Image (cartoon, rainbow, N blue to C red; front, side, top):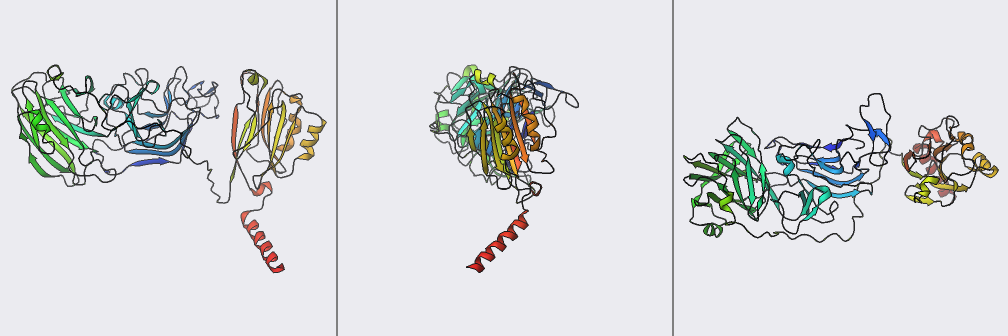
Length: 584
């Protein structure tokens, strides 16, 4: 996926996806933010500007400020594994990240979205980015924006195995040992995380403020979305398990609240306190909702206890405590059944708790001022932060395999790095030719040529010349074997550079290139074909328009090169083997 505004993004279906238990996975993929295919200005192109990787003019997927993302996390569960990222460099006008999130996301993200075995090239400046207020992100404060999170399974993104990465300002998912990454606008944390799907009736368009008792001054405020008319609202926060939270409204409390346990594993729990007027009476019950059959099972009423301490002493029982002086109705949300695979509900169905409230009061139900410091707790980590990986992952990323419609066809991976005099003056000292990961460096000014057998892919000859002289001309004319792929690089600004082009025509170039005033060259040529291959190329750089690292994959073993077709070669090999056997 190369040169896109967003490389790839998956979506699922609504609040309760119909394809429960399914998931989406990407593996063995390469994401390139900006390649060396810069395009041209004009035609159908609407956007033209400076790129981030080489600071040269290029086509852009949107305008100059559009935030580029390689893999965009949305909905879920999605998994990205065994993949590689290259060329994600921001500009002064644009954020650019390997991993990002859907812009202006109004709805849920699951903490089951996970990344593993990823490789990031050195030209990836931001591995992940959670957005900031500004153009395209607007206020970056919609419910999905605030709940952005992913699981780094093996630490290949963060360096911390089994870590979770979320928004830096979301304290529902943090603890004191989390590591803030300001450039990402994120925090690396440890823990167990799930969602609570909250549906309300009888109070339209309410905002929900959720306070973790350990961070009472850092609430997460959710707008919710309207689903079934003006009287209904729904929210889906991500919560750290084994913690307590209080929930508050910016208006009168809803008449009915249903809390569904999403992605809870068996025995996962949170303690929640909902704000109500002191004169409220309640009917509280739990059930298991089978969405396929539209039936309700295991319907059980909750009974009252006289204190929070008494409630906390019976965490597995269906009990509640209403603190009338504060206005908080406390009860546990606990999963009593396990899940299968990627199902977001249990094997028995969706475990829920339903609260029906009766009150004559119309007061705004925000109990924060009374709840804290009474219920404030000391922040702590339930799951300790992992130790940082001592070494970067060596087996991560996509395999460098080029697939072909012809099963016998293989490819030659080539890199040519020429070096102009101006680049040398700026401190760049790298000039080389690489063939299938074998790098051949050259340190002297001049021309460097590598010949590769076009059938086997083996390097068969290397030569260097300080200038275009009689010796070099003769080598270009007679010194390179037929059926050779010819790679050429330059260093400095060698003498005779402008005279070399006519001598390269024999390698398949259509005509002698104009290299007047050029400072560096890179060539992919072929010796010995009546019909030159289409991949033949001569690149030239001058002044600030430097060549940089040039990379090509070239097909091997083609009949047009003079190579034997696989069937013929196999038959001849069998004939030779038979003859040798008979001689023995």
